[in-house]
Length: 109
Length: 270
Image (cartoon, rainbow over all chains, first blue to last red; front, side, top):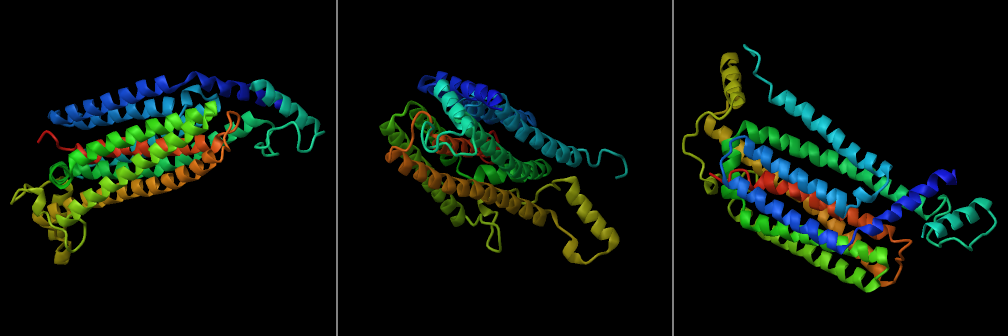
């Protein structure tokens, strides 16, 4: 049992590689992406405005999760747990947006 | 580090020593510090998964309303909210996350002074965020943008006679007429716009309010780990409370990363 657990412990300490310099770079990227999302919002791209804004927000989220929340340097099981959360979200939101935005597509309804 | 963890695990497995050889922070149902820490991280992520689900449900329903009445939501966002304060708050929250990452790093290296310093900075920025949000709410209150009997669309510059906005409005109108149901079911376009404008602010206050509630809880947690850090309770082998509080704080940041473009940047180009 301890044989299976100890490698995890060893792997965890790989986190030591991440330091203040990485955090500053990520912080800069987050600020840059925030500026980009404002600039994108200043142009009328139609429905693409929304997609661009959500795309940029998703990139920011991934950066925060991977670096600030250390998931990049965590073990496989943490990856599974963190990815699962967003997989369920995709099913939830994908499902009900699919419902609402396809209403009225069938003639006579 | 890994060697000590292994050594304690072995000592523990042999069951020989009570109270010696292993880290005092190791709860005795865990094999070693690594396992204890992984368990805490997984538990935290499972919890954050539930948080993702309920914020996701809210954001999803907001998207449905936003796309069924894009003009009303655009006007409500542009004239009802203060995009400057929203942007400043975004920068503040991102910076607080940076300081939180520094605080966790200080936990990793065992630098007690840096832990205290960065936790205090995180708290200061978190509080500043809430104060600015308070000023925003005040502005919106004065413009009668709180949903309810005193709600007014005056500040929103909505067109006098709006075009029938969506299919669902027409549907409600038509079906009510054909069925000759009671008049309270019939919604005129003007009433409809007013309802949807209120709906925007229902979402706005509910989502930002829920986010603020998380900030209050987050500040409570930061205060707790600040006290522990000051007492020197964190060592490079054990700073799990600090790290878990960090995860929670970053999660609050992520929620705001989505709320900001959704609420403030709807119709900046109009």
